[in-house]
Structures are given as C-alpha cells and as structure tokens.
Image 1 (tube, rainbow, N blue to C red):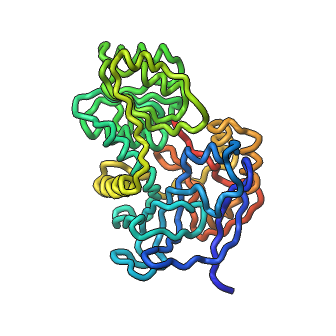
Image 2: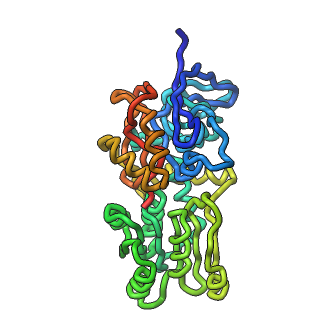
Image 3: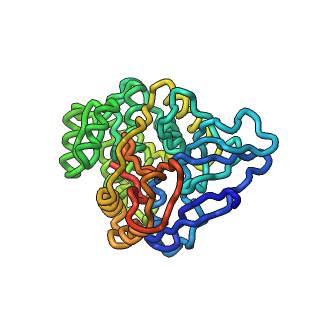
Length: 362
C-alpha cells in the first residue's frame, strides 16, 4: 500500500469529515511538510457557520493557514531547506497531516524553538499589526481583546516602551496581559465604565493608539471612544459577519487616524513571519511551551459555542470529528489560540474531538 495522508474538510455548516488521500509529491520549488499542528484562525468562524456565500465542501485541509511541522520531501530546485528541517509555513491546507507549499513560503525554526508549537502566520500577523500601529516609547496603547493576537501585540507594545492598557472579558486573559507587560487591565463589561477607567489611569489624556483585536462592533466603537484626539485606531480584529454601525462623525471630528492592519501582500506576510521567528528566537515574543494538557471535549464545545454563537451546529460538527489519543491532540496555547497538534496523525470521523474549529479570543 502506498503512503497516504489524512485531512479534514468542512462539508456543511458545522459539519466536518476526515478523508484519506494519496500523499502528494512536491513539484519543482516546493516542499512537503509533515504537519505537527495548525492554528485555528478567527477567519474560520464565518465559513464554519455556513453563510450564504460559503461553498461546501472545502478542499481537504482547507481554511488551515497557520501550520508548522517538519520538511519530509523537497522538489527540484529547492535550496536552503532539506528534509528534517522544522519550519513554519504560510500554507492553505493546514488541517491535515501533510501539506505542500512553495519553498519561499517556509521559514526554518531555530533550534531554540525545538518542540514548541509555532503558528507562525498568526505571530507574523501580530508583528505586522505592531508595525502598522507605529508604537513609540512613552505612548499609551490600549489593546482590546487579549486572545492570541492581542497578547502578542501587548508584548510587542510593552517592549517598544509603551504603557499598555489591556481590555478583555476573561480574568485569565487579563492575567495573561499582565504577564505580557500590560500596566493596567480593565474587564470588558461596561462601555462607559471602561471609558471612565481609561480616563482615570491616563489622567484624562486617553490613548495615543488603540488596537481593536476582537472583530465585533461594540469593541470597535469602544476603541474609537478611548482614542485621544489625533490618535490612531488600529483595526486588527477580523470583521466578517456583516456591516457595522460606527461613530464615524465622532472619529472625523476628533481627527483620528484609522489603520486597517490586515495585510494581503504575500511578501509583507512573509516578512512578518520571518520577523516573528526572529522575535521568538530572541525572546521578544513568547511562543507557548510544549506539554500543555489536552483541552477537554466539553470545554472545547463550550468555547466554540460561546465564540461563534452557533451552539447547535458547532456541537454537531464537533461530535463528528475525533482525534485518537495517540494522534492529533488539542493544546490551548499560552496566548489563547487553540491548535490541533498531529503526533502520528491518525484521524477517525466519530465521537467528540478534543478541539473546536474556533479560537479563544479575549
């Protein structure tokens, strides 16, 4: 029997199946990567819920774009990478045991990151967001939503010399923000109460920069309300579930700079990934340590349901995918991301999985 691989695909709203495929061979200039894991991005939530524009089924492994693993084959003409190299990749079929990518879409992970889960695309996004935010020493920076991205941006902003105010829902997220260097933490509960607390801790100056990292209407409006006149509002949250009602008149009157920090240039994304690997190797950002215990199926369901608001459909989908204990495991990363980690990568489509197709975001 020839070697094969397995991949998950979404076949309908909240419905996942696992398929067996032939193991692909890399073409000229390509690598085949045996994936150790893949981060689950907030951009997956809307396709998972099944909007009218979504076409099912997805390609096997499709939607997964935050993979990392070990090169196990190279095509003709590949230089600088070889089988056995551990890499983070900008891939598009990461919910699988293997993926084939262009060699230039892979960045070697240094020995200091051996064994550490590294969803490089997500870290690269955080680096790009911080760069687009143009944070300077002495500024006051608020980060709304301390999930994976928000935590990393908090770390980078604090290291840039800013005073960081972290605003998020969960106590655990606020504790994480303090670990990442936040000087102040505020529960994301009462809109006007948050504004007054920001006013208090800034002595009325408000924030030079506010990074909104939730992707929902209320946090985005909150961001606009705590930026100082002439300040910068950075949209880092992934807004994909419809239109927004925003106080554009207020933003206009106060002379705010509005930055959409989402990048679409592949070269900019690759630059962010390379800088993220360098930052992790130097300790400027902290990837999660290996060895976190698996997330329980019950907690996985509850997290997915709470975040996506599609309880019944998500439960149905999660119940149709199971990862055997000796193969992919779920790990909650220290900065809020949930990943599916493939050890021996044997999947079977029955029973509840230990991970949801949804991240934890603040």
